[in-house]
Image (cartoon, rainbow, N blue to C red):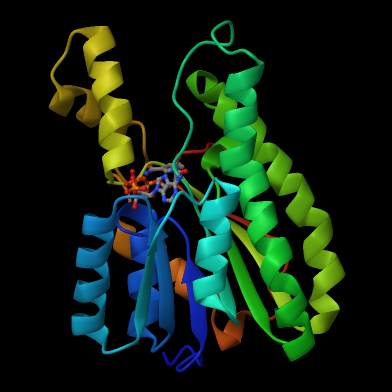
Length: 259
Ligand code: NAP
């Protein structure tokens, strides 16, 4: 299917690997020029070069911490007028409800709620003026079904979801859609790091922790970044203009719910 976005320009945050990279790759495959970001300059440059070589699109890379004001300013300055925004950042660490103090919550809110909101506020005026835009926020299944050990993530991402719910309806008349993608467990370094914590805690090998988790998912495997990216690119496509303010769960059926 031609996604109808060839020649458009996208900013994809936190995209040197994992889910962000999956989104960047799928947009590039649809002919979209990219501005991609991550903190580590070397991995980011490698990813940019690989995407350029594979898809022949323009890729600008900006190494910066997207959760800092200076980092966002650098990324937004390089991005200029974008038609598509994919927000993303690293997730907060796991722990217990009794572990976290005010500073931990502020860090999580900054990364996973206030950063995507700031990026949206920066690009929305231009999208509205041009009467076309697509925004996808990478959030988590935890906004629908809490993951107890990820209390910081549960809290911050639910705040973002509330903001998007109202704002998506405010900007829809101007041709701009905002939706959230909610990953269940996907095969990325973040998943391996969380599985390593479980393996250490339970005194079992990493592979065993992974197999146990996969067994809880109806498709019996982790999601792939390619599947995730393809869904993201469709939400950014010309065909998705009637999808507004949705929270799309990509979890292999893991959340046991009728609706
Ligand atoms: P990942 O494989 O660890 O990749 C994270 C990417 O984000 C890397 O490119 C990393 O590069 C970049 N990044 C991290 N912090 C950044 C920052 N402050 N500024 C700029 N770039 C940053 O993680 P992932 O699995 O793709 O996860 C992406 C998001 O989805 C996270 O918020 C995660 O919590 C959420 N999520 C993931 C899953 C899953 O199963 N994978 C499930 C639910 C939710 P640098 O380190 O070089 O900056």
